[in-house]
Length: 411
Image (tube, rainbow, N blue to C red; front, side, top):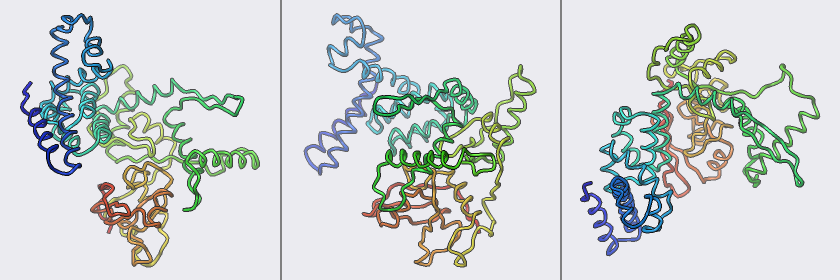
């Protein structure tokens, strides 16, 4: 282990503590702590390899850590596991030992090595380290998971099948009410979530009920309606799910399923690294689940450029049905506000209609009911457009975080 990056981080922390404002001090101390965690992982691995912990009468490394360092055994196990990423990924080791990324970030790289593979992680290591240096461990995990979904789409189908094996749903009477437990597969669970999102949306900006209260009351209203008007029939309006998929991915999935169906005893050809299909409100899905949904669904196609029909300018305030569907497709059914994952959306003019905004696809953005109310109450501000990306700021004009859509101008 090269101790110089860690020593530099400690030296910077010592200098910051003697001068500078409290924010600089906290940044420097955190960087030093992250660097020391990485160094501790390397040293614990060396101690485990040498078994020198036995010199202090400890039979295991975890016992030595508890007795000598007064840490929980789980903390030591995590640090030792992190050594795999520090050993196999050079850029990760450099960033960790200099305090640029935390032990929690390194844990995500360990996950990537186990579930994505060494070679793909090395191929995209520079990109992932850049994400780790700028984002929290959760954002890094999403990036690694996205890479896993692209490289191993068959794992998505295995997760779907595994979920079906664990299905259960029970409503048990208790003294003070009913207790609901269970586990639902991907499709059934998303159907339930779509219904709950719809019936539990705030009624207006003055709706002060908590999320739990709105969900329970919405479910109660729905059950009243069903019991009062009869159970739903095939001719009624059914809740629907949305799947967003490129043509190339759909063709590749169809070919993969065809090969596995017609030649079940042969290894199918590897799928090309296409963008995985996305089930709105759930995430990426594999080729088998995609084709299962495709065979029972209606299809709406979208052309992402030179579709002038989707722009109506100042001639009409209300977005057309095609525009609403296009906004949902562009955002993959999720609220555009960074960090919000609600799927019950309303279409908003990013430049308000009253201020001269146009009902053009580039200026329309999908927001959940809560975020839409926040915009009109001045607590959330949106600028930009779907081409260059929308900018979200709070009431103090501080950026929430930029979300790029990957969308090209419609007209």
